[in-house]
Image (cartoon, rainbow over all chains, first blue to last red; front, side):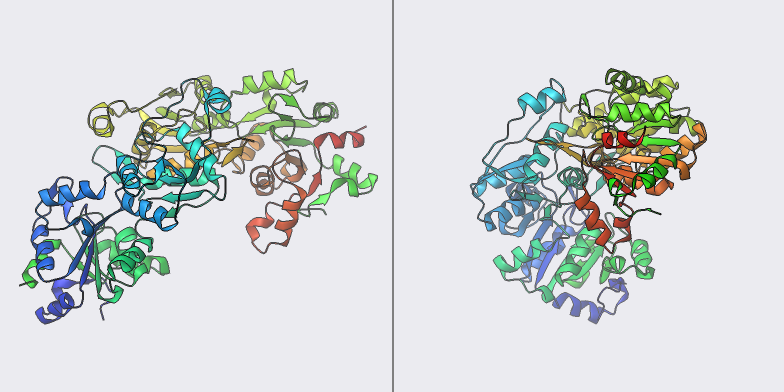
Amino acid sequence: MYKQTGTRLQSLPQEAIKMFINSFDTVLTDCDGVIWLFNDALQGAPNVINRFLEMGKKVFFVTNNSTKTRDEFLVKAKQLNFNISRDGIVSTAYLAAQYLKSQKFSKKAYVIGSTGIVQELDAVGIKHTGIGPDVLTNGLASFVNEELKRDPEVGAVVVGFDEHFSFPKLIRACSYADDPECLFIATNTDERFPLAHCVIPGTGSIVRCVETAAERKAFVVGKPNPFMCETLIREHGIDPGRTLMIGDRCNTDILLGTNCGFQTLLVETGIHKESDVEAWLKSKDPEDQKLVPDFIVSKLGDLLDYLN
Amino acid sequence: MYKQTGTRLQSLPQEAIKMFINSFDTVLTDCDGVIWLFNDALQGAPNVINRFLEMGKKVFFVTNNSTKTRDEFLVKAKQLNFNISRDGIVSTAYLAAQYLKSQKFSKKAYVIGSTGIVQELDAVGIKHTGIGPDVLTNGLASFVNEELKRDPEVGAVVVGFDEHFSFPKLIRACSYADDPECLFIATNTDERFPLAHCVIPGTGSIVRCVETAAERKAFVVGKPNPFMCETLIREHGIDPGRTLMIGDRCNTDILLGTNCGFQTLLVETGIHKESDVEAWLKSKDPEDQKLVPDFIVSKLGDLLDYLN
């Protein structure tokens, strides 16, 4: 009834809000900007999440951040008083490993990324080339003609967030990906994270770089790609029609919900606000329409009033 | 008459070929894959170029390679027996400097690139931040919070080929380009250079990376952007209708010709062949049609027979 209308939830009668709360059994929520911001829980978010769990709803924290393992996210969640379990954490490092496992991948992965990815690969027994700096010491000609050794065991390229991303890594990745048999996986395509005094490039900028040189597209496991939903449906039997996706970024979180047939809720504690939604509602581009959430609230904690 | 028909030049009667030769006063030619390959002239190419010059035609070597200055290209051309002068060399490092000059740019340029760019900037008195390695030594948080100093004088980001491209460079470039007043220039967008045993990423992969993180498009001075033609028309008064563009790559060289209203000739000593042209001729995509040259020859040297 409120599908993709951008309705302010609290404008509805109490009764309609209760119906909405009862309309989902499963909650998927983004992390940064929704339940926490850096190292602090957002006001009321732990109470809402814990109340959902007490009500018997399944809750999953779904994040495009590929730098941490599920266990590391679990530690952070526990510290911030979220009663989530390990099964409730879905990160893109984990998903990349799950994807390779689902492909019965038995070769070695060349990784542009950080500890999250290689530890999740280790956890499912997938060999990889390791991480860390890879810099040019003797110039390009020497690197290409003498130092560059192709590892014949490599059968996949995995690209995630990598603060040590460099030209030699780019050469290796696109040279492996040049073989059409080589799998080519990206954790996510988030463009960037604007801070007050600078811009931190997102994984998406690294992915576009490798894709351009490789002249092929990566398979993206993170939001908004429905691979994440398919994994949850397969492993936890969730019902898309009775699932709610909560997020602060419409082109990842809300679009994931739209792509998977979930209900969607935008919180205004992160990237996008009601004014963005209003612009998309007026747009004639059907791609913009896909970004419109069903409901909007200022912050997740506002739901608490309706959960008792 | 043969406009964008992909006609094999030598299939025409001798008389028609002579008419074609007389139909242009100016020749623009790509370098790698057309007149030379790495450090060797292609067979007959110096004779054809020198004969054009003797016939009184203006000749320009136009290359997207941003790693060398015009003077360095001139030395190479002389060594390979091309009687070209400095004015006849148009490279993207030179064009980037010309573009900034045309904008009356008086601030400092942040450069992702190599010696070609900074020397051409020096030649027109434009300040820059220098080139070379820029690697993360103490981790991302330390870099962003302590080491990253923004230079308030920087008013342009210039992106060319850079074997030292790294995540810190990416952070600096997209943080400067985040200011809409900051000029954002790319030398070219060539995707890559496939070698026998690996793939060398082209400037285009670096450009797409910075563009994604900056969330804006760079102004591209190289082929196929008509900026190059505009510069030649302004500085040398060339007549597009009586100009021939020769190239081996249709999505840069031939497209430049199409974009500028030049006649076009594809040589098959580099990237694209007649079979590619046949596919584009059959395509219904108007963008593919723009890649079709007027004429095709196996190699530039084949023209020699018609120049005496």
